[in-house]
Amino acid sequence: SKTFVSMPIRSGALTCNIFFYGLGVAAYRSKWFDEPLRDKLDIPVWTLRFMVVAEFVALYCTIWLMGRVDGHAIVVIYYVVAGLLCVDMSLALLEFFQTNFDYVTKFTSFLASVSYTVYLVHPLLVYFLLQAFIDTYHALGYGTITRTGDTHLSEQHLAGPGDGALALFLGWVAAHLLCQLTVWPAAWTIKQVPPLRFIL
Image (cartoon, rainbow, N blue to C red; front, top):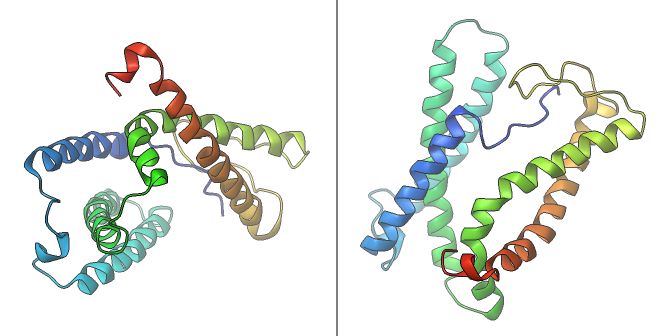
């Protein structure tokens, strides 16, 4: 696979992040989630979950078609499906965790207390970890990952099985674990700075 990385600062993702942040504020102020979400859905929960899976499949089908079909129609379909998936996946995750994990511990209280700061700082950390993966890939002598413009496709075939699929998967796992191990303590540390503790 030539797909390498898509950062959360691309055209669609940034606007979605702002939109969902605004929705989160509105939901908190209006107390939308004080009652079980599954009681407010106008469709069965399993129908929602099936829709999320179907939208995931449709999204990856459109991504596959983008490199093979010319025209703007497939791009429009991609954004429509991605938008539906963002909303439905968010509802499905909220319902699942509200139904199965609606309790408070010291650990979950810590996560909740720094989650907003994590939300703000994680894109920068993810970027540096992905760049570290690229630098490590180069240093090990596997070749050079190059990209043109803002595309997230590698111009070269990557080393390893599946045109680099294994290397990309291991890089993703390493970057994900390092991000989780560092972003939460970093967010807590940032929150201790006197001017920021009243904002974050």
